[in-house]
Length: 467
Image (cartoon, rainbow, N blue to C red; front, side, top):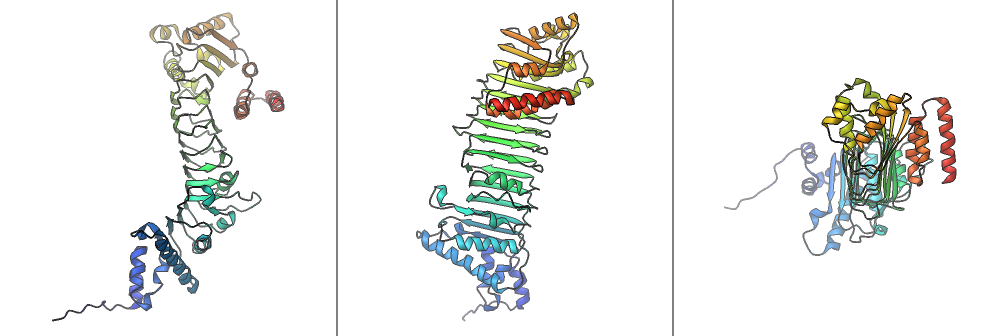
């Protein structure tokens, strides 16, 4: 007896609801079984177009053409539908992007997604060509209507400079921004971040920059992750809410990383083989930092005694340390403060030269019983220069200070203290443009009164004129 099979009969409205609960690929197949269901899948609240799902044969061009046809059909269905249901997530993953030929379809897909108030957008446009000149170029205009996005992931694209004259934020609701294999024009990244005033998490992986320098400025950013990007320098500025910073790079030309005014920074993980200069110009008092930089030459840091810093930098030539000492009054003067101070200095024991700025000379005087029981923290240091806001005035205090410096760095060729921190700063004047943020932060810390700040401003102006 012959067996016949047929689809169970359900009202179209029921079938529509079933289709709208399926993933993209099964929904497309189900919709093709009946004329009444055709195009229902285009109203899915989560769309996932993955060209990799189609690559089962040898003819990549044929598969790519079929994939593009599916995208075109989607756009046709959406154009016919007067309603534009909210899109929770839109994912587009191309494996054979064709420069120029596919641009119109991609632009229309992005436009439709924004029209549907997409919340999470994930776009990857891999091409057979590796050169960035063959990347899809995302223009600033494409993001003008991206007001609803909360999460944005971009891969294998180029981003142009954004018109800084734009008054409204590009993506006012964006919280998570992930960029991988993205190439940026000179100011594109800075402008993009400024156009996302609510971004909390930023990840950059294998990105490139023209020229190879980039700056990040964000009042809302809390987590920044940079991995394997081709850049010579990175400046993070005005990121006062930043709590976590991760940086990994083996880029041969990497020179400089500066984190300026990052006063809430609590966690740093850094592994940079060729980094030459690191400026940590502000952190939280509970900072936990792990820095592995075998070729680091100079490290500038504004920190607290309670900061936990682990440094692997065998070639470190100079460490300039500015200590925030508000917490000294809470320490037991005899032991707890001394042990904490000694442990902090040990982290910089690999440096040949240390320039140390403190507020009060008393904070660096170690008790005799402590010096007799503990090893010196800077046993191999060659030069130690100390600057203070409140220097010793009595002979006994001067003697105690000199004894403490001798114990701290017993093998140093120079142990010099300056009764004024500004004198020490000018005795070791900055010589590179990368020193400008350090100079500005130092002068602000050393000049708390209006009169001192005026003098500091004059020094800063003279330094800029010399550059």
